[in-house]
Length: 612
Image (cartoon, rainbow, N blue to C red):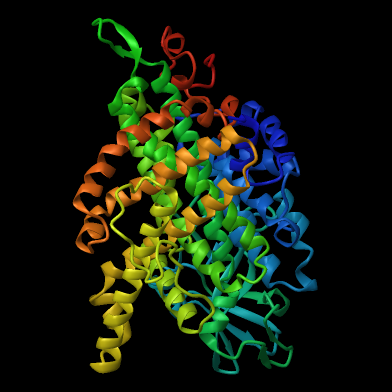
């Protein structure tokens, strides 16, 4: 295959940016250190982020001109340091991106300071008692007409701002969300800029910052809890793109509905989901590179009884790793397409939220599966911190609930899906096999068009079943829709969201297949996408058999085809993993290189002074 073409298509951005990142990551500051104190871990993550910002390789203003550049930065940082990447996503997306989206001319002084870290920000939305229901948060901004200031308070223990990245060590400003009280009336959630530290980095009067301490991973991220007691901020620090309070205390907003106002001011969570997905997609590629590269050089017992066979050659290893490689490449292609649609919706505005939500869910869960499997299939070496699987696994676990709990986002996907179909903004997928949208009992399922129709059939069936249940329970029996969704059909909702996301991903993959120019590259993509879709159908084979769209004979033949598909991909695996845009020189994992040489002398699990 054409490895350069493949790498460019996986990259999903202007290829000219890749050498700049590869060059930047040659700096020894990106060498990981493991057995160091908590505070040193945090400073290490900050200094890596500072090295990136000093290179002027990205800007918060990219959200206006080139959002994909922000996502590309996340993909690289997800590979080399998830802690630094997490600090970056808060600085440039949640804090900086929110300021960009919600500000007016009076806030523009912040942009260059965000870019060079002279202003380090944190994003104070989540409260101890209000995560998924943040619209009901307890933090208040009371406008004082006499002084033309907002008075910020977190009045209860539950209202403390919780899990606040950058807050313990590095932030000097916070974007704080709270209920805006003007002339005694609650005007809903808005955002104000609050200075939380002075020039000496001491907490400002009325601001209390509590260190949340050691976590199960990503300890380079300085998460804290923030309390505010009668903290006064100038009226001009209100983010006033959509809502304003005049000097005389008159509140105006272009959005009259308070819940809609909340979604306006928290819209950065949407791009945040793509940032989390990008961090995790980068980590997935690195994980696969490390795990498969090690398997290709680690020798196990062969037919002769000697250790002369790379463990990658074993069917056990290939069956574990290669379906995940196929799924990861396929989700990468879909992720690239969703990034592009986010940047340029062009008639797909009603689908962007669904796409960003499902992208995060599928990519993050996939990283979890990849990290666990690569760790296991690398044996004891996979358990060493310096071989990085644990770091990537912890990123996946952080990503599952960051910028929205994945399972809750799946509910959001289905609600929007039903809303779009109901409003005729979009329809159900069209099947190609026959006019009645019913698959024939074909003998051969290993065909991309058949596989796509199988995925469409599952999605359509799940959608119609859910709608029929809701109609019966809510329209006929007058049950409360919220209660039905939460207490009766939860599994149906989760399955439908997954079916939608996987069908959409396969369609994006087929679009890529049709536009790929090199014949050999096209053949490799076809092998990958077929295994991706086949693995999904295999997982759901009971569904297809129970709905009688697949015969037992076809199912048996299909199951028997999977080892052949895996074997077909194994022939191209080396080229594929070497085309995943992994900055190998910046990964610093002993098992990717000369792991025997690394173990000739003690390094105590560190790589700082090791030759790799």
